[in-house]
Amino acid sequence: MSDVTERIRSEMAAVFGVAAADIPADAAPGRIEKWNSLGHMQLIVALEEAFKIRFGDDDLIRLVSLPEITATVTRKLGGQP
Image 1 (tube, rainbow, N blue to C red):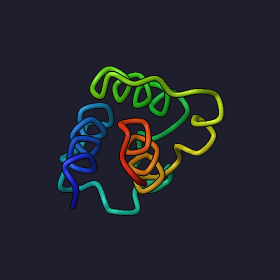
Image 2: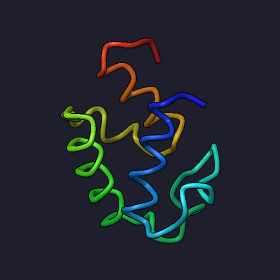
Image 3: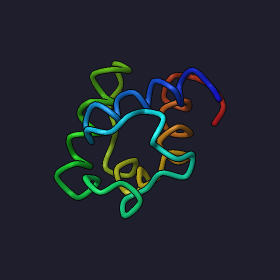
Image 4: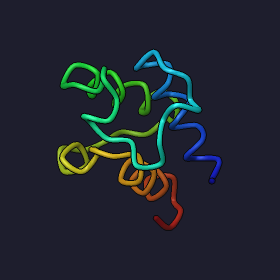
């Protein structure tokens, strides 16, 4: 698992109040109890602060699973998704 994924999991754990180890590789709303609309916005803000990036409106629509978030963050950091 990549360092980016691990950092995202760490942010997710802090936002959703769960252990990072309890976040599955295919984490998505419905799989994590506190991942609702408010939790989603809190996660977005936390990720923007942690990675020093900004998500556009188009990104927000796609950020609905750990794999999609990892791909988007990696791309914004200048890597290949």
